[in-house]
Structure formats: C-alpha cells, structure tokens
Length: 225
Image (tube, rainbow, N blue to C red):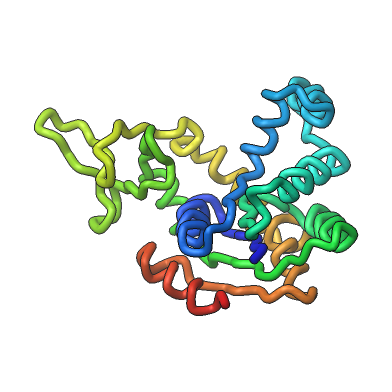
C-alpha cells in the first residue's frame, strides 16, 4: 500500500503517518530525511542538492524527484510506503505522478487532513517536541495531550518522560504564515497539488483534522482497505 499524506503544518500528519506505519508495516518516509541522508552519504544527487541548499536556493525537481523515487524503491519500502512532506505544489504533484507511473509504482491512496488555518496556527505555537520521538503528541493548549508538569514547573513528555523543546520557527508567526501561505494556496501551492490528485486515479481520503488524534486516525483507517 503506497500513500501520500497531506496536511498543513500543525495538522498532525506526521503522527498519523506513524500510526498508519505501525498498523500496516509500511515505511514512513519524510522528504526532509531523504535530503539529509543523501547529503550525509555524499551521493551524487546529494552533492547536487547541497550546492543549491548552500546558496539558499530551492532544490530543482529534476534532483528532488529521482532522490525520492530511489528511496521509495529501497527494500524497506517493498511492503509499501507513506510519503510525507512532498509534493509541496501542483507542478511537483504532476511531475511525481508521472515519475511514479513511469516507474510502474502505484499510488494507492492520497490522505488529506483538512484543518482550518487559525486552528493549525494554534497547534503549531502550542506544540512541544519530545527529544526522543517527535511523534509523541504534547501540546500545552489541549488537555488530552498536555505535557506532564514536574515539581519545578518544567514540562516533560507525557508519553515517555523525555525532555521537551520548541522549534524556533514554531514561535515565529511570520515563518508560520509563510509555511501556511504555501500550503493553503489552491492555485499553485500544496492545496493545488491535493486537488490535482483528486482528478487522478488514486483514491483521495479527506478527513476532518479538528477532533482528537484517535478520532482522526479512526476516520483514516475506515477508508484504508
């Protein structure tokens, strides 16, 4: 089973991807990890990507997509994969769809977590990241997943007791706005990519991201077969 997962920053798509991975035994692939791996190992594509990254430029699709395809063809993806964080715009969606077709690699499901922009922003500014596992849900604004407060007033992960940190850009409203501008753009941005897949053969699952993690997960699992 091969799945693309879409959702704005703050929607919990990484957490949902991890839940799907655990149930179906597929590999959860994050696009950022692919870049780090290729650059760290000094692959030809990684070296080319680093040249753009070092200059502060976006890595072209003709480098990014072969890198992603190569990762999706590794042994751990033979049982299926969940791709999170790519594509980010309509052009990338069209290019990825063609590349998957040329590689005779089916795309079975596209999962979209739908969330109001203001709610997504609140979820970002209030989330706390566990140093042991970023997918452990901790959020200061939601009682069900509030971190544990210790006697000295500091917070620890509600799942494993690990140290909690914030991403600097999670507290930067301008950075949040920029990320969401890209995602919610339904003409050329990520929403346009989602809408593109709705015109293709793959089944698109759209779920409300407002309820609890468990409820969102249940909604997704009901659609996956």
